[in-house]
Length: 114
Length: 114
Image 1 (tube, rainbow over the protein chains, first blue to last red):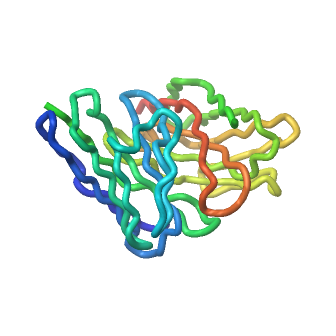
Image 2 (image 1 turned 135 degrees about the horizontal axis):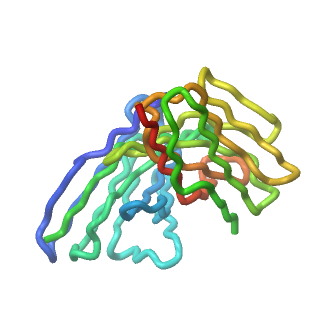
């Protein structure tokens, strides 16, 4: 299958700071990337859908000013958690898809806000 | 919107036995049904998928069946091994094109006892 690389795998940041998570499709051009959040022992919750060169579409209840998504190229999307607080601590996962193919997931980023 | 129910939430089997996980979906327009395996601290990995024009698909020890009339699909793992232990998620998607979102079940924690 295709490879989606997510970086960093773990990050600890201080409350009030911002942190950026990168998602790269390594061997294919991703027309669409998705960002999920997963709480312990729970399912994946879709946060937003992004297409290259256009604004992301956020799911209801997700603060777009807090979770900034940029999809600058067909192989890179970034999620920036702004002014992070302890309640933002979670496992964030991206996935990438090329046209109507299956979605491939990154390895996830464990964010801890202290 | 689409709703996906997954059962059981936990499943424990002896090595060599078979494991079956079942999912139901609500939207009859859904036409793509992937299954993901997620190991602790990692992102989901696609293990098998099926589209609505097919009733069954098999890949070595893993098979998926789909009953469109009843709106349910199942994952079958035969000759289970300890390395099959993980959380398994089913998902459903409606329509084609890269923007279409996956709706996930709540997951099944499979434990294979040596």
